Image (tube, rainbow, N blue to C red):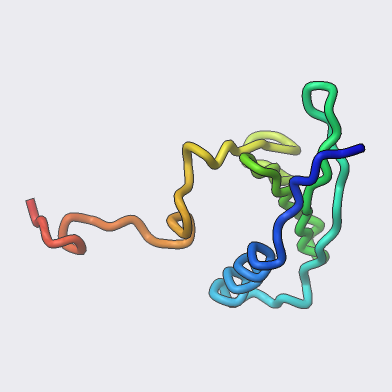
Length: 102
């Protein structure tokens, strides 16, 4: 039996909204599930695929696997240390934007 690491419906809806914000076409994306093995345990994950390009993003409880990656066919990103809620959708704030011009 696999451990469930699939996204909740609310999380999938949040991803859908990010697709809309990026002005991409939601109809070009497809959700699926994939069973993966890590440390001799099975996990069921959510996978979002951009159908025309066949690029995909696999979501689990603490990492994102993108294919293709920047440096290899599949790359894993540990987002526990990289992202905070919604931070990855925002532009970084410079000194003039946060009120401390230096």
